[in-house]
Amino acid sequence: MISSSLTVFRYELRKSFGIGTTIFWLFVILFPTILQLLIDKYFVTTLDLSATILAAMIPGAVCLITILVAMTPYLSAELEGNLWPYVATRPYGRTAIMFGKYLVAVTRSLIAGLLAIAIIFPSTSLNQLNIDFPQPFETVDTLAPSVTAPDSEETITENTELSLNTKTEDLNASQGYPLWLALVCIVALSSICYSSLFCLLGTIMYKRPMIIAIIYTLIVEVIISFLPVVANGLTLNFYLRSIYVRIMGLEFEQPVLKALFENPNFLSQSSTSWDLIFVGLLTFSFLFAANILLRNREYHVGETL
Amino acid sequence: MLKISNLTKLYGIVIGVNDMSVDLPKGAYGLLGPNGSGKTTLLNLITGQLKPTVGQVEVLGERPWKNNVLMKRIGFSSALDILQTKTTGLEWVTLYTEMLGFRHKVAVDMAHKALDRVGLSGTDRERGIDQYSRGMKQRCKIAQAIAHEPELLLLDEPFAGLDPIARFELTTILTNWVEEGRGLLISSHILHELESICDSFLLMMTGRLLASGTIQEIHKLMKNVPKKIWIRTPDAPQIAVTLQSLEHIIGIDFHEDQGGIDVRTTAPNDFYRALPSILIEQKLRIVEMESDDDSLDSVFEKLLNLHRGES
Image (tube, rainbow over all chains, first blue to last red):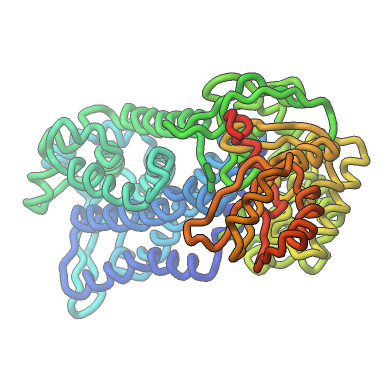
């Protein structure tokens, strides 16, 4: 099963670099940098604001769009391309096609997210960040209360103006992982867990899966996850943003962000380790459910009765 | 090779396969039936893509549903055209061979051999499948089915869309396959396509197994099936009265427009021999005469009527 999954992974990864797909992909990767350059031109950015915008743009847009395109139609593509009979008549073929394409989605999302980070930091005002050596997890966890304890000590370095209209403040005021490293972590986690979520959605709703996935993402992962209610604990976004905020030891000064993030229902009250365990469990559950469904369902491809 | 017991497959309230039982020893079998007769459903049940609603299927002694071991012993080619793939034929065949558990290099060699066998040339196999003709796609599909040298090959409508040369070449490939002593079950709705390949035939319609037997038995069956002959004539009443006295005539109907008659006979050859002398003796005229074609569709229709107890 593992070798078959890896075979599908190699094949699908090679196939996924078509001209059209690559151009679209590059546009998605460059989008956060373009947006950040515009922000630099017209607005004053702070660490909390930049961190929030980057989280929304890179794991929230670049990775999500990449996964949406790469993962969600994995089953419908086989069915619509009339390829399903060949998959279904291979040992562990159903599972292999799912895991193989899951690995492709994770890889593509990781590459996209990392490239977006690699491009955005040197080419925008974010290059003013003091890139510290990452601190160990334990240290970061102990800093978690600082989110709600704004009196903790901060290290503010000298600010530099990038252009006439751009002013960057407090970009290196993080007390945990630096922004770029926190983003790398969240990109990795988002790639792994959102791919599993879209895998499950694509398995359940294999007819028009993209529409279903977009509607689901907007309702659950955007609207519900941002409501400061207990129900947002069922969304991946809730755990990912909690991990993100904690590992950076991020403090919010913007009034709106401060009000939002200080709400006890907006961030997980568990430790980062527990949040990671929850994310892992959700990922495993999504993949497990998708696999069970895929193995037990009958698909009528081009059946004439 | 294949044992089917009381097999029924329902799609909601629609019956795909209806209470079918058959036991086939190793050999080459043609699965014949008009479009929509349940051939594809049966092949999908045999290949483990579908689960029986009632009854069971045993292929090479094993039940196919979720059977990973059996999948290495069978090869399957679907009737559906391969769509939406820019992959080359070689990559495509290699992928599915590798998915059977072979290492990449071994799978590439096996894919080359299979493509050689189906006659897809070296330059063609490096081209994208989306540029292939229907015949080339069929070859490619068959190559992925035979690359691992399975014990049983199952082909769903492999002749569909092929030109006469490609048909001849495919017939040769399959004849060689059978001569090597391997199992084959091949579906089609055209009898003569399978005559030179298969020893025995299964006749299906509306999900039922209507008949089975050798080619001689099938031809005999076709011969004994009543045949309808349409005659356009200005002397319809007189001809009807005269033909009524013939033994093998089992029914005569007048056309609504009074322009002719439909004659049903159990011995069409006797009828054709007798008709000219009757016309000359009675000085009757006919303008046009047409009979059911000899295609399997009409035979199936008639077999189904017999199956239902109708004349």
